[in-house]
Image 1 (tube, rainbow, N blue to C red):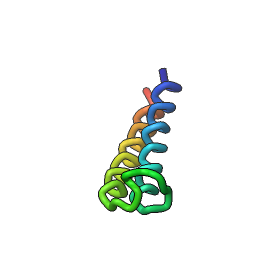
Image 2 (image 1 turned 180 degrees about the vertical axis):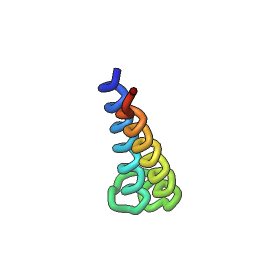
Image 3 (image 1 turned 90 degrees about the vertical axis):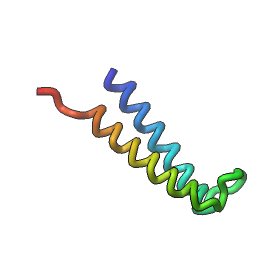
Length: 61
């Protein structure tokens, strides 16, 4: 189960990175390219992915 949580969090993180790069205009070929709002959406998505990684790897005592 831990592996699935980690993979899901990494997927969300990767999507956030992709959206951020498209928002900055560094990745071409999408309606998101150069749209500043996708930079912010991507940053929030990356934060959710990082929080998901933290949650997936928390220690149980």
